[in-house]
Length: 149
Image 1 (spheres, one colour):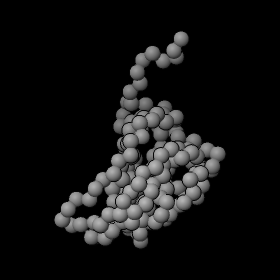
Image 2 (cartoon, helix red, strand yellow):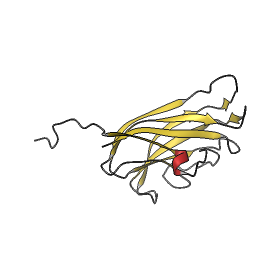
Image 3 (cartoon, helix red, strand yellow):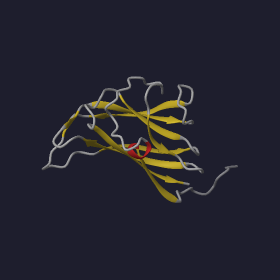
């Protein structure tokens, strides 16, 4: 017999960002080539006390006026602990982010990675970049769109 016969909906939106979790820092200037959950990880989301449904992650390039952001790959990890290690942090997905030249006359592209997964209570999402996105403040503003149960 099924344990839950009713659909579950989030009760409140839960938008989080790399900047909110990392003292306003732009994500990307520091590279991490590890794919096992080790090295420098950027916290981008924390699930609520009852768990969360994560819909997508948005990446918006950020640079000094008319600067550029180097091409890279962003890796997304799920972790069961704020103390990350290879035993509690798992690679979930990757997205290729192209080189972008910022402009004061044209909008920059936004890149989205669909996640569509329910996270256990207090689980976390982390991001890393395979290569440096350039000299700070060149990098990405990372925003997670989710809902808490």
